[in-house]
Length: 542
Image (cartoon, rainbow, N blue to C red; front, side):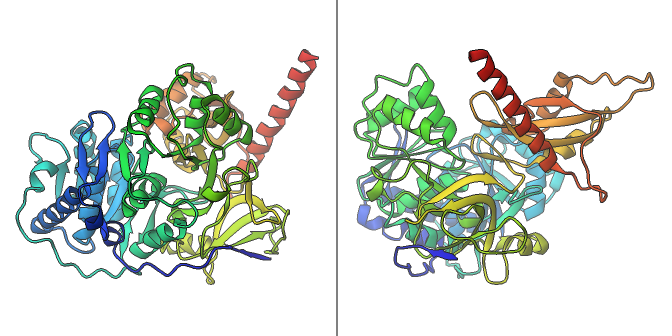
């Protein structure tokens, strides 16, 4: 059975992303487009367009041209959108990078996509230079602020040359190249065309519309496809004001809502948890809020309700998607916020089709109320994985259906529920952590004979990486590696959000005869342990 969005199809948006977003900016003129939530600096729509055109001209004069890849590695700043749109205006594809990545991780991404240009901020310059030296393909590093030996975006915006006239094919040319692990394996470049990103914005119009004068708070990172779409492209396309914060801090977050009379907030479950439990998360005037949307990872319905009650918020909406979907597939329509079923991740956005496929391996389509793998099709589906045709074919079939690796069901009214994951990917605080990447790090340790990584739940219900480690037996016959040794070793080689947070030493990890790691057996073991502990706790409380 195929489920189809109840909303009318939208026309494909065949415009470059900078035109799709800023094409109406002249209508908004002196309205504030971007506000720095810490110091109040403001960029109007007129100033934003002028800055984008001048920076694009400077990029082009420097040699940036169509087909080049520009890496943008920065926390949220009001300069981030300027750089992103200027790069695409010059014909480049932007690969966004987590600012907490290590030099080795950055080098892998730069080398994989052959990035020729990097734009960053001065505090990250050390690791960026180290990574650039490792790969050798980078022509120039530019900073948004100031740093010795680097050109500054602030100065480049003063360039007086003409904006470049680049012929872009929205259906084929790439606007963004974020990295995702997909359903399994190591991070891969997700090829998102101008058309797929711009059309996904149009698909959201009827469900969560933005408007001129509306104020949206951007605390989720722009480098993540969720933040790039929900907090940058979507509101700027409709004349809203985006208040930018570099990171989540309970006090700063709530103070900004109160000070700037924020109407819309997009969050991830860890933020909902903090708002529900942090002692400082009370006493603020949040009456301006019209909606709160949570996505990037599953949100427990009870936690969502508790957070809304504590802070006097409207019901917390949910959405569902993935990088490979540009990213949105479902969301609660704003018009249904007070009667949407708790725990649902919403209804299909316009022009999107969905199937629930049997997990038995027979490819059979299931009906309403039955659980299986979620498979989606629509104009927002990625072009594919960069340089990985086999992984692309495994993800998208010839008819355009994309396998999500998630298990879910659809009720009779068309609401989607996500209940589990087929894929091996770990979602820690909304960020993707690839087990295979951590296993590669672990296996490089001379005292580790074998290792496997799975996601487990901590005391707060957050999914964290747990490593099963087989010690390499020393000459003395005893392996001396400790849990702390393992965690410290991994922490020194990966971004902080990827750290192993629990370690168990075992005699062996389960593998098939082919050598393939059987993570499902470890996940089953973890579930059994949780059940036993749960029964013991119930017995003690009784």
